[in-house]
Image (cartoon, rainbow, N blue to C red; front, side, top):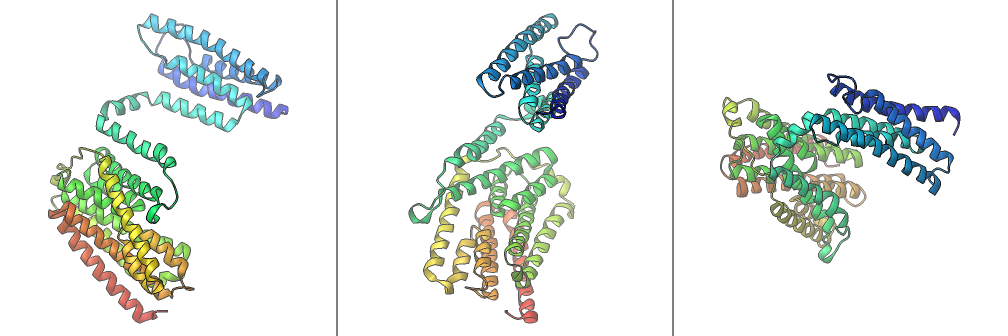
Length: 429
């Protein structure tokens, strides 16, 4: 490498040490000079020392055995000296902490990597390390507040996503069932439930339920419905607030269908935009009025107590049920042919509107007319809305179900009226 790049890499190594040392030095700024193992100067020199060792390794062959030996010996020697001084500091202060020692080792390693690897990655590593060190109080406070159920549920969700998902087969098996699709539904259900739990706990009932519902609606409004219905029947929150969350998630799902259609087949918007926009306005408006426009809001917020982020067996079982519905809808569509597109869309739409929207957008106008594709998409949306309403009645019951019956009935009626007026004005295409 030329001298300019070499100096740039040394500057990054020094900058990493200065950044980490700044945090360490600020935290120990009130202590007397000579009473601490390392401060801003020591960490800055540590980063620079790592860079020097990295440069020597590059001169000896870089990633070859010789270069690796130089880095290994240099790191071991540095870790031994720095660790000894950190141990002496702990003994003098009567404390028990490896943070300073580990931070020094990370500084040295990042300095070496700045010379031998990607400077940007080394700089990012320095920023992240300094951020973790500076966030000690916040991290400790968060750990102190988290419950065992929250930790366990979070680990289960992470395992479902990053351990199990890559191992699940991504191909159609017996009956055309794709295990990966079903597992993704389970992850969506668990994720939406966990998101709602965390939002309510940390930002309050009304704002938390609406925020989690809005984000959940981007993934699956059905998942939001199932999660909120279970919490309503278990008494984990005010039914009115939970129903408002489902209404908002449904509004987001209507807009999501519009976005997919606009991206794949904009001509479909002529017919599907009016009813879906009307439905979105009504459901979103109902959510806002339920949360912010009624006098009992303050008293209802105090009743929200989510006890469990989600139940693993429950979300997997319901995901399997939705997967069966999707497969049944696909088979129905295949055996009824083009004339049964709407019937198949209704069957699939009970669980998955996005799949219907994508499929119909690809079929129009070659296989299906614009009107035919529009009716299929809207039929899937209506079926999905009715299926969520059925879940609300069967699972949530009581006031939760009554709230959604009123909102969804109004949204479906207004959407149908908007479609009728649109057909009168523009025809069926």
